[in-house]
Amino acid sequence: MKPAVLILGATGTIGRGAVKAAVDAGWPVVAVARDAQALEELRRRHPRAALQILPGSVSDDAGAAELVAELQRLDRPFAGVIAALGAGGERGRLLDQSSDQLRHAFDDVVLPHLVAARHLLPWLGASGRNCGYVVIGGPGGRYPWAGYGHRSIAAAAVRMLARVLHGEARQFSVRLQLLEVESPVRTDDNEKHACEQWPCVEHIGRKALELLRHRNDARCMDAVVDYRSDACTSGEALPVESEVPRSSSSAREESGDGATRGLDESSQRDSSPKATPQEMDSDASLLPARCLQDVRNLLDTITSPKVTVKQIRSV
Image (cartoon, rainbow, N blue to C red):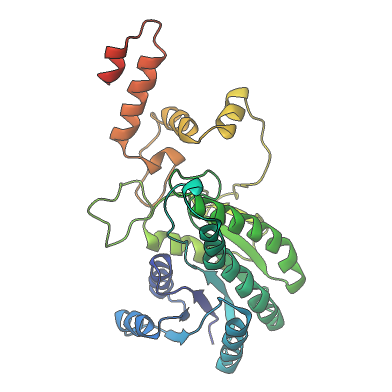
């Protein structure tokens, strides 16, 4: 029997993409989500696939323990887990909202990942298969998104959680990694207004499956894998956490607000081949090209030796 992939949050935006990517690649899938009706709809979308749905929750220890019991009753091998859990939807300034909002963000985004890992890592380890465990991280974990402070803090916490669990999962012979996606994603619902540089959800799913497929590959060892890298796909893996020499300008960019960093990276790649919608090349791709050009024009005007208020307003 071919090992299956367990997908948590299978009815969410990223989860549906991961399910389709796995089905298209011929992987048996066990899809888990809280909404039984949404799971039935997911199964109807893939009528001929080796897709098994399993209503369940990892929001608390009781639900996660029940899920593991159900998985054990399936009595089948698993290659690993893809955790595509919710990213939270809070908007607004941190200072304008109560502290309860941040607590809710942690309850909705961070704790389910911890609960799931606490119960699923020992279960995977008991199989003796050297399984993989891929957490899909959303935007804001590296650089904060203006107006999405709660989501950014929660994403950063998930990023650190994954790095800690990466080390602790070794005792179960499981490779746990965070697949970091620092941008919005392209879906059928937002196709009309999505930027062409945004990755499609199915491609994210395929990259997560590549990490599972290469879980025993010594080239791919990092706790955090940038979605844009070639890790575990072709050639040598591109470490995300490795320290590399940085210029003083790079140091200033990293301590800044990320916008300048994105502009500099984008200008350096003007002569390179255009990135496809599925393979972003920089954080600058989060912005439409017209927005980047407007910002460059404004910066050029401000830094000009002779600048007037009228010139700034005309930009």
